[in-house]
Image (cartoon, rainbow, N blue to C red; front, side, top):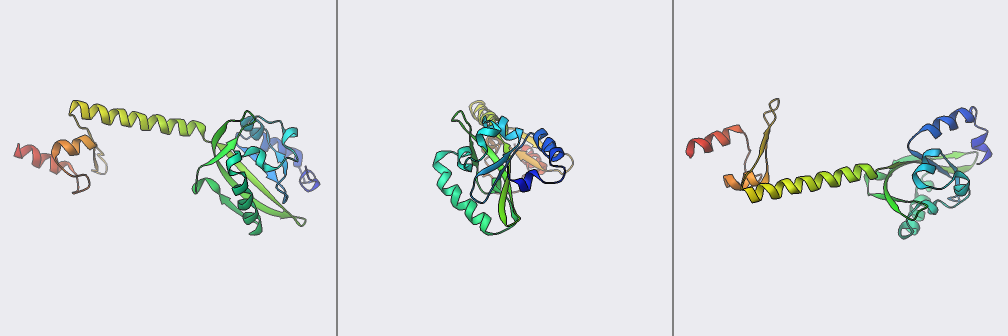
Length: 195
């Protein structure tokens, strides 16, 4: 760890707080070498802190994006002290010691400390969220298929806003092109009166 970080007032208190976080924290120097990781990083990636210290940041990245990432870090550091949330633009992958990749969200900040640029990344493993999103999509697809097979649609009415949501099959049953007109309760009542 660089002495600039370890000599920070109350470093022991700060490092205890950082180690209690479930998110990973990775600090790299301007040579893109890891100078600090917290226990969240150790749990997430499977490497020991001593194994990661002085290693290139690439050790935590899938091999197919390492070159691209090096260019990104150089460009980011060139901007000077700043911050950026990386997960907004694309899905980012981490690389575990086991050789498995996993989806992460990363926020990074850079800061010049005594003439040397450091970047800190806060890393969040989003594997569970992705698994829930996939399960939800599968469930929605099963419901859609079941409604199609049963020739049955569904709808939901928000009593506070009056907003009515129709399933794809409900549109088909009523013979209405999706988004062709505002769907509300009066449309159903008009259809029912005409039957």
